[in-house]
Amino acid sequence: MFTESEAGQRIAACLARRVNGSAEVSQVAEAITSMFEDINISLTPIIGPKGIAALHRRSLHLCMSKHPLLGVPYTLLVVGMDIQELRALLAEQSIDDALFFSQEVLNTFYTLLATLIGPLLAARLLLDVWEHSFSGPPAQDTSR
Image (tube, rainbow, N blue to C red; front, side, top):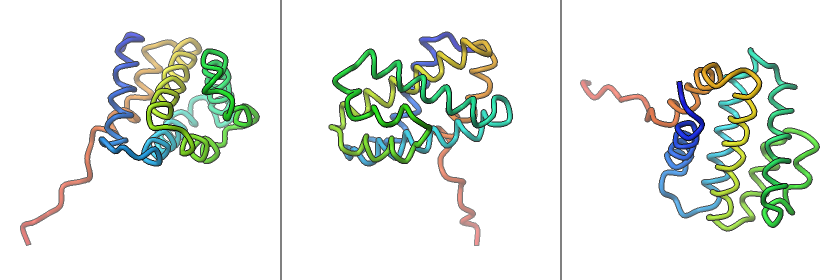
């Protein structure tokens, strides 16, 4: 369905759409939190909450090892899947660092998932997460 680069482009587009051009780091933190909540909803029936938590922790660990300067404040997150803690820590970063780290974590999460279940199934399971970002609020009925 998607190559790794296409998945990365989708992730970047999804994150950008959820950030909605805001220059506020809190919006980036909110975007990644909502994406992981959507990922959790999509994947829990397939790999369970412990599987998702393990992928999340591994993604954070790999990102921290590649980007040690960014990883310093995230060391507490490796213990569990606390996306609210991730949100709080991202909110303390610059907008560029928060965007970069968010995209890296999401790309790594997708790559790990694709390694476990295959890229086609991973893309299909996460399609709702990406599509959710591109669907706006439901159209309102103005005929009244």
